[in-house]
Amino acid sequence: MPKIRTMLISLLGYMGSGKSHISKMLSQKIGFDLMDLDTEIAKKIGMSVLEIFEKKGEIFFRKEEREVLENLLNTTENTVISLGGGTPAYFNNMEIINEKSESIFLRTSVKTLSERLLKQKNRRPLISKISDENLPEFIAKHLFERNPFYNKAKITINSDDKTAEQICEEIASRLKIIN
Image: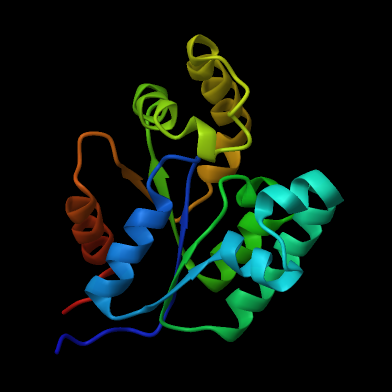
């Protein structure tokens, strides 16, 4: 069995960057627990993230997100946490994420994100009503707003043209998790 350091790993990036998929694979590969921030918020509130946004509003969601994030970062160890796409952009979330965990930004191009998200539009409330031809511009604008926060991550992994396995290998290698 490989030796593993005690740590928290936070995966961040735009929707469609692969956070959920990579966090699941990485946690299995290195024997860490897995936490999805949106899932934990939904469990706490007893509604889906979509329902929370619709019924309680984004400000309520962001406050709950901050509370659940802080709790996860303070009470878990040897865990891979998949953050929401907007999490780093609110409050001083990036500062606490960097203080308490190894933050990994899965950088993905607008082209790749557009290709992936076009196939998932009906499952993504933020983009479900945006026309296919306007999606790349919407993503580019959002990335422009969020990149200053994403770029504060300790490690950036360019995920275009890499398999999930290659990305997991790169993360494990860069964090020197497995001896």
